[in-house]
Amino acid sequence: MNNAEIVELAHQNLINTYGCVPLAFVRGTGAYLYDADGNRYLDFFCGLAVTSLGHGHPRVVRAIKEQAEKLTHVSNVFHTEPMARLAARLCGHFGGGRVFFGNSGAEANEAALKLARRWGHDRGAGRFEVISTLGSFHGRTFGTLSATGQEKYHVGFQPLLPGFHLVPYDDLEALAKAVHDETVAILLEPIQGEGGVVTPRADYLKRVRDLCDRRKILLILDEVQTGMGRTGKLFAYQHAGVKPDIMTLAKALGGGLPIGAMIAKAEIAQSLTPGSHGSTFGGNPVACAAALGVLDALEQDGAMENAASVGGYMLERLRKFAKGCTRVAEVRGLGMMIGIVLRGEAKSVADACLRERLLVNATANNVLRLLPPLTLTREEAAAGLEIIERALAGTPAPAATR
Ligand SMILES: Cc1ncc(COP(=O)(O)O)c(C=O)c1O
Image 1 (cartoon, rainbow, N blue to C red):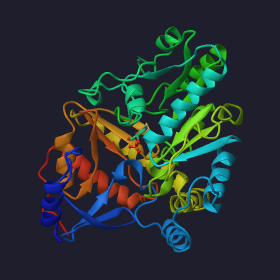
Image 2 (image 1 turned 90 degrees about the vertical axis):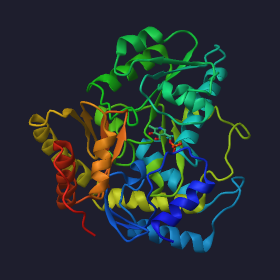
Image 3 (image 1 turned 120 degrees about the vertical axis):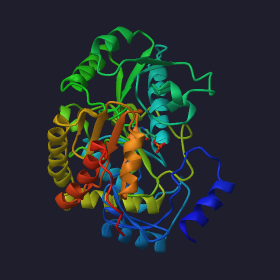
């Protein structure tokens, strides 16, 4: 099928929740994707921070193939080696703890919210409320939607769940004021992704950690987007020198396969007991095998170091460019998570990049979000940036090449 045929078939049969670009991809390799008409695209989108090792990474492909030939599913009332090994590897990086596996970021956060409530319940003090922040994004289930601080996602779904309270991001005073006797946890992204790559002040997480310790409440960090090397360290909180009580992962964890994880300190994790939570597909052996391949690559192939250095180059070049471009208000981010904050909307710039076969995401109305593969070379980075700079400068695009 060609692009037009796939797009038409999809339009006729899918519920239109995504407002799709009329393009269908059929294969990918490294930093490039190929559409059904044979056109090649440079991918600074990465399935929204999912394919962080690029497309078709040999370690991930091999792990998936080998595991698919052996076993694809058993009930979670039994164990599998990939799930046990992945849990051990994640706990090793977290510095102890216990893991629960789901299939997405929303499920990982939902598990974190349920654990926090159960932990509060076990303390017998009527603690249940979770404080989260304006501009945040935590998922689309009712629990995670209730914690999400963006009204546009709430429209038509009210009433949301009780027991959530929103405060401005990167505002410690507001946070401290909001904590009361019924508060059980604070839920934050170390960098707000969907909200526009919003980076807090350097000491924010540390001071939130201190507040949680003082008030004896839990710190839950949503690393669904920032985790797995995206910012140049395995987890973004490592830049701040703090450790959360609970952390959630998804997106890049499975290298393209659906998997989410909630990791909690062991003494807190005890609050979830047999029958209290679960997921039929959670910790699927093929997805866990893929995630082990991702961890191997991150630990052994220098992808995170590359993200830090090539990401640093991109940030520096964009900041220099921004000085001479009135369209750009600010360039922010860390590692391979970059936000170009524009004066005016960002979608038309993303569209101009698409015409030059570069995939970038526009978010929060005025932010161009770059989430390239951590394995991006400097040459590929430069090629993508030239397209972005041209689109921002508003110069006409040269004829597209195959
Ligand atoms: C920080 C964060 N948390 C949670 C989610 C939800 O993840 P999923 O779409 O896998 O449910 C996202 C998705 O964009 C996210 O960026």
